[in-house]
Length: 165
Image (cartoon, rainbow, N blue to C red; front, side):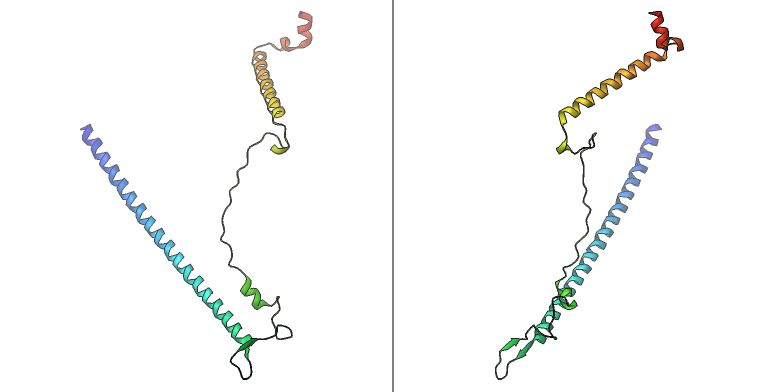
């Protein structure tokens, strides 16, 4: 009977595991599909922006060229004067701006130090010796405290101890 009950419980556990793994796989697939759709949408937007920029450049180039009289050659307008674009014009700024950088988190791990000075300025040997002495002093104090706990109040008094000696 116990074996049958154990078997039944194990079967229930296994069914639940399978159900949860199937749900997890389905969720992963949905997440992947959503991520792919976002990427495709972003790529489409970037492609459209690039095409628009190319069109704007082509329009500007076409606007700045004037055909020479009697020839099929074109020449570029002089850039000096009122009608020219300065380096501070908004049109040029729009063209020259790169796409924003993608955000990321930079994780920095620092080495833990007991002393406030930077490692490059410290004297490691002296610091290690000081730490060793401090640890030793703490041990002796904790040992002394353990011994003093079982003494009477008068036995802790140094004057009484001196007179007794």
